[in-house]
Image 1 (tube, rainbow, N blue to C red):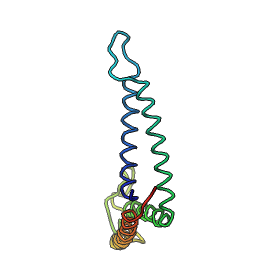
Image 2: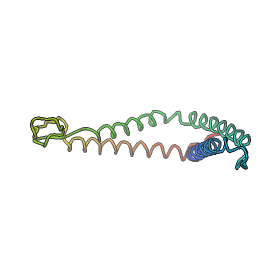
Image 3: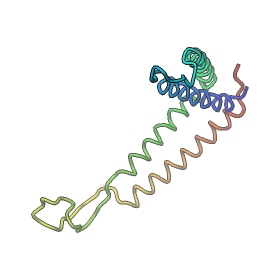
Image 4: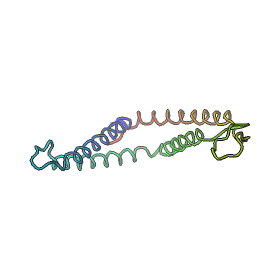
Length: 146
């Protein structure tokens, strides 16, 4: 199986585990005279089996991804950088005060990084993200796992 397919299968297993957990949580305790909708012991057994499948698949994915693991970590950090940059305040010049308790209704702001600077950094970083993601996608579609 290709790594890309294994990643999709991992996501399906995660969803199935969440569904099983939800059903066990929802239907475990019912009014005594009610008909039980599901077989809790069977769901618990299926849950245990799916968790074991997931552990095995995650281990195989982890081992197969060794050659691109640095790219995966870099991709994560670059995405964090974009999130960080998106939150940088670039307010400059005279602006009505943001603070209700301020004695002066107009405040003069100065920012080292301008909106143009931040937008440029985000654009450059997103270009790097796209490039790395393409490499990872190619690797995932061409790499076989057990």
